[in-house]
Length: 67
Image (cartoon, rainbow, N blue to C red):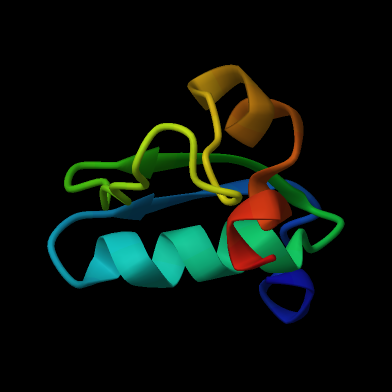
């Protein structure tokens, strides 16, 4: 985006683009300010399992889902 002259930008993704925007957010490039997803993915993790996360845990550390 810097080559196009943008220092700050947002990413919007719907359908397959939601995966692209999600991955972009996880890479956290310096200029990315926000993402908007029309089709967020859902991870179902059984309560009580070692990988169980609350939504607050995820918001505090999105990379925790990759653990």
